[in-house]
Length: 166
Image 1 (cartoon, rainbow, N blue to C red):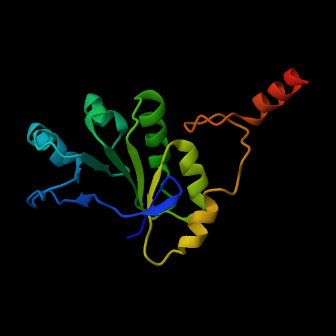
Image 2 (cartoon, rainbow, N blue to C red; image 1 turned 180 degrees about the horizontal axis):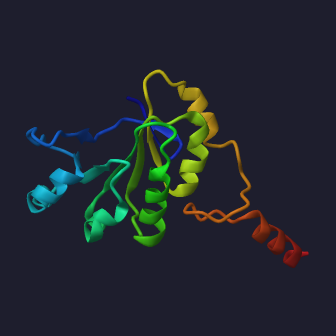
């Protein structure tokens, strides 16, 4: 599946590994169940480690381990399930996670903008989605009304700054 990160298509070097599967060399994404069961062994490998959280699993379920991860993938089992938006904001704003935050699953083009505002910086696309549409969605808006995890300056502050400069 194509991967968009920071507004461009990149090669995905991460491998998602099932709970019972052997670990390959290189960066791996495991389930929260496997992460909890094999944490020390996974960290001792010396390669980048990521976890994939189901929509029913919470950011706080990771605890301090979140800071030791290079990637957290948040599942959208259906476009109507928005729990991962809240999980993303908790990871970025409350837990200070600075690694890759990836949206996976049933993610639609019109959700990309809001996902970025919540802290996502990578999007795993389904093969049948139009790549060009996704890339266009990344830059459709330039001014925002509310503060968010992306730390962009809201319109109200921009107005105050402009008046102060006059």
